[in-house]
Length: 555
Ligand code: NA7
Image 1: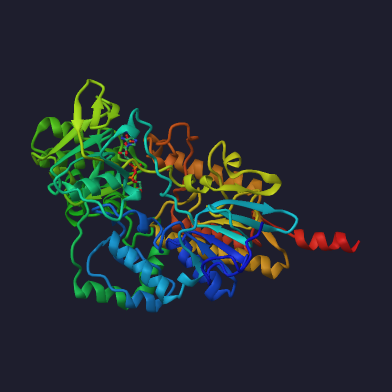
Image 2 (image 1 turned 135 degrees about the vertical axis):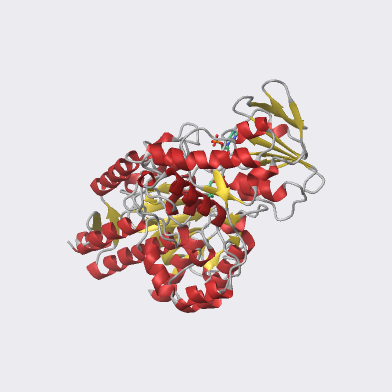
């Protein structure tokens, strides 16, 4: 049953049961989509979010040390000059509270909250072919319809908690980093952290020395370089503020949209001495993406270049970590091809007496008991708090959590049973007028600029429908298959395939292994989009369901 206007609790956002567009999610992508559709295109829009306020990823990931390791000047929207100028920053990177504050400011500035139904999750979205409408059902069973459905549900939001025997028997506190409680006291407690990805190393570095004892359960060692966070100068700020256009042009003209010049020099084209100097400079300046992409052009392509970048970090670990056995466990030996990491003194943490490192690859976790973690050799680690920094069912995970059904009742999970697929990272065949922000096979890049590009592309598709007199648009199966192949071919020419990571879905048992990103960069992606639009939205088909239905009735 469609909810009636009168029995809905909160006025503005849900004051109707039918909308031009429904947006799921109020993070970076959802907020800009809402602004674009409602404020710029004049559509009637409602957004939904399970959280109590805006922020998306930055609402939930409140763990100590949470930071965006894309630099402050590009971790923001570019679409509004006044917004760029009135939200200043003072450090090279933004911590989670600052990113959240920024998104709250965006919501205030564009009056977005009145169109968002908070604390309301979307459980299902079914496409009604006859009417070309999406029927959307909340967790509580309320129903709404909309012509357009935008899923901005977050590519790094569906939590991955390993299935470890006895987990539910633990009597201490336990939580995943991305569902961090609003109030949690770690001081004076024995804390265990499972996982040493980007999240784990931020958390571990932040809480070491704050807690009574920290035990790190590491499965795979990581390459990480210093983040280099700190205050920025007035001159640095005024230079950026005086040329926003130049900055965003360079961002959209680059591969990773990080706001720095990516290197075009092959690592082996310089002498070993010069190479070391370039790595040392990048290490001193800080930043994982700068180290991986600003030093040399071929670290992800040429095994020799990769080895040089990796062995530089290995030597740094050996210099920093005093105990040789701890250093050995912390030192990666594989390719340097996962998402580049950076830290605020991660390796130094392991010189502390109140921090222990446990190699759970050599000695896996056997079970969790009421009082802690038991390893396969019987060693017991008693804990008061156990934190899972174990990542996500990345990219497609949160889309599949919604019971999403397209044409012919096809479920999204079934459509993606051989691996997540899309055309251009925003649409998938069989799901007309359903648009994804940060969907599978999006460009691998700094997120805010990418989300802006996707929002603008979705707006273009909706405008194209309006101008064509159609009522729906859908990616063709052929275009989707071709995009999947293109993304796979590009990834296979790089060293990325040498590591099992969430970029391929390899961190989730049973998940089909397929690259989940377009790794040829933002500039190339924009060239593909430009060509697609110049060719009358090639790869998309228009639908005239309502028009056909009317014609049938008339006949
Ligand atoms: P990641 O990068 O997926 O890291 C998860 C970590 O958890 C990683 O060290 C995993 O080890 C470890 N893990 C996962 N399952 C287990 C089990 N069962 N036992 C022990 N250790 C385990 O997630 P993050 O949250 O750090 O980062 C994801 C992105 O989110 C990040 O790039 C940011 O952009 C935000 P493994 O390496 O698989 O052996």
